[in-house]
Amino acid sequence: MFLWFARRVSRVKRRWGVISTETVDRETAVDTDESWVREYARDHVAHLLVVAAFGVYPLLYSLLVALGGGVAGAFLPRPETMTAVFYFGLFAMSFDFISGYTGYLSFGHAAFYGTGGYFVVLVANGKVPLLPADTPFMVSMVLAGVLAALLAVVIGSVSFRLSGVYFAMITLGFAQVMYVFMRDWGFLSSNPRDGVAVSNDLHPAGFEIGIPGVDALNLAIGPLRGDEIEWLFLDLGATEVSYYMVGLVVLVCYFAMQRMVHSPFGRVLVAIRENEERARAVGYNTFRYKLGAFAASAFFAGVAGALFAGVRRSVSPDNSLYFLVSGDALLASIIGGFGTLAGPLYGWLFDRSVVEFLSKTGAGGGLLPLLREYLPGSVVEAQLVGGMTFGEGIEVFLNGHAPLYLGAVFVAFVVYVPGGLLGWVRNRLGGTVAKQLPAYLAKLRR
Image 1 (cartoon, rainbow, N blue to C red):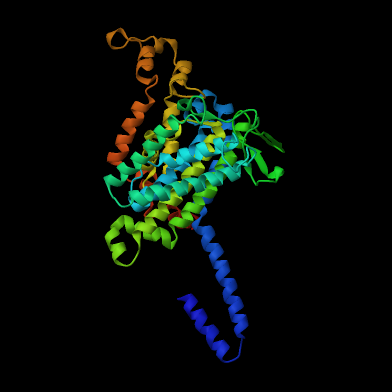
Image 2: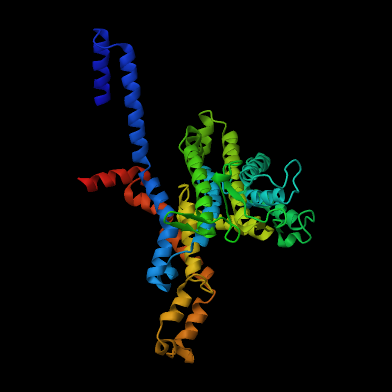
């Protein structure tokens, strides 16, 4: 109402010659730009807070571990784990981009993840025509995404002629064909079943993320071969540098997907999910929209696979192309929240945190070594049922049983939190976090 009144006043003034048309247009443009900036900043407060939290996490982790010892380390995931959460979280988000926003479950999404991983490793080993072994990692990563998108167009051209469980099964079939082919392809290595690794002779250092051709803006990733930074009060090791550089790529990819989701293209995808027949009836070519979404999701899945191979410097059929890799993305999406885009990242963070907390060895901290260290000897030796001691019970029920408990948690989420973590938060707030958080903060300031 205020904007309408202001425009009417401007028109009256312009009609009576009080102000010129150019002045009105300039003032309107300035007000529009300022309001757009304010609106954008207000709508992205949640994103800024999340990015800030992830940004300080390695430093906070080191501080808490130094102060709290094994207790803090037992409950917090290690920075190495967080790096893996980033690149696989990107893959899970790409899965949610097609499955959560169109309703078509891509059980063969691992095909694109593996394509990205294998491509960058083969380029690094000089086995891809027209691409030398010294091709910058950023270039090969983008090309890996493009190759995965092209593969998605081929697979989607056939798969999207079906729907429901038939679509899920045919995508799974394509992925399994790729899995068997890559597992037995002798061109890759002498033993392709074990995968292929980056040649240490061709690449003695880690892959670099940054701007190709500008050495000052490139940092190597990888816990063993990555760069280290010492600047002012910062002293970042290779693990922390990998965390930030991989996180930066994932952040850019997330905002690109989010922009697509909130564009008219994304609205059509939601319409297809809700009622494809109605979307087709109003004139949308749903086949093309689904194929475009499939290709876009495959691109980001390929980038995720490239990051995975870049950090690990190797890739194998079992950890990139196997159908359980797609199953992990589905698990992350259900725990985090289908159709939320960011939810799968939080879902995978929850998954990895539980696994690490209940890990068999407790490397870097976990419940099992924490109990071993802090429980008194009298408690450890206390007799339970059947002559079993408390310490033996810990070994029997905790040692190596993280997947068992994670499965129980997964069932609980499906039954009691069907919307996932982020979906539950949205329901509590009455809308998306990005939209509701500014209003909530405004109430606190009153």
